[in-house]
Length: 126
Image (tube, rainbow, N blue to C red; front, top):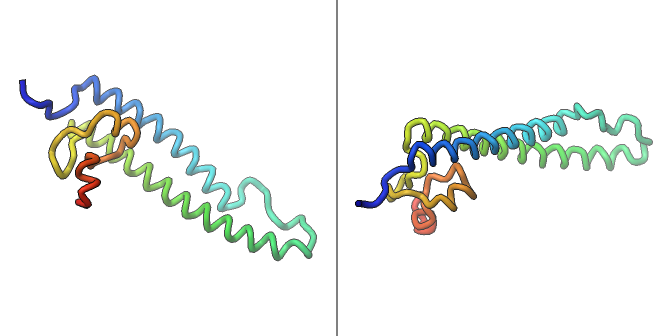
């Protein structure tokens, strides 16, 4: 029998569950980051003394910028995971987009939205 060209429906279902769990956790983290940016948790500098207010506002701005970057990364991660779900539906999940070979399960468990095998990634092909 030749080399396996795609994962079985059972294997794809296992990956689908893994991805759905990761999406759920990622969305919760994204909401937390979004809340920290909008100060919806109520932790603001309005009740502190004027002496520390300027310092806290500066730190708050840096913190919000960092949270904003993290939120953007988290949203991109969620989108990549959702794209992986589409590949599962199309039964193209786990196939390297450069080599056409199956990406090892270990890699997909670690990086479920991977579209390149380690070999293709390390060869510098983008």
